[in-house]
Length: 251
Image (tube, rainbow, N blue to C red; front, side, top):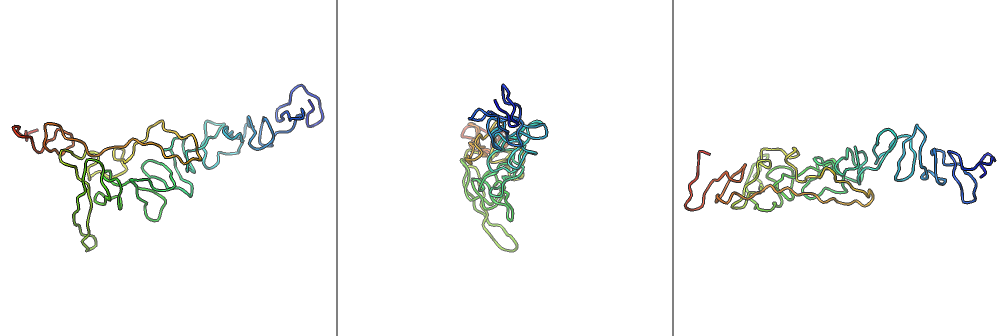
């Protein structure tokens, strides 16, 4: 085969590829080896460049929307991430300008998902209190709707001298709010999230904007069968018993 500098060789040398005419042609300048001409046709890269295998490109540094693998490669982040640690959907450090960061789970999405509310003046979504399906803000008494096995309770409170309604979610009869969802615990702590993300959850298609399936946490749990009512933090912390049974107050 004929090389670009007019020599005859048995196989095309590094930095060149065999064209359809049977001639060895130069790879794109950023490639070490390639299978055709173009910036996305690289098979390997020079030692001073990083390889983005999924698109066949060699780059000086891993660009936005990618992360470094070892010392030689880059790969794409999950959808809508600008900067990330790995491919997991929960590893976003910064979102694209068209997306919002869910602060407790590190997810980037084009809008705040159900159970979150936008922090005013930012592109950050904060979680509602975990008793809420949706909320007016992140406070315990700002639920717009309640999770399963609970009901809405409306009360009055004073804010800046004005009386306003507050909306909380309280357990249905025979249920209790688990300790990790008690009003005294701030949202965003490790045991106080509206969503739990599997450690191995990955999104393979960074262009589809797929919303992953999350494991839902239920803050309202059923009391023990021995209790008519209970308060938690465990299901057998009874506050009233069924007929014929007495409450053990020393427990």
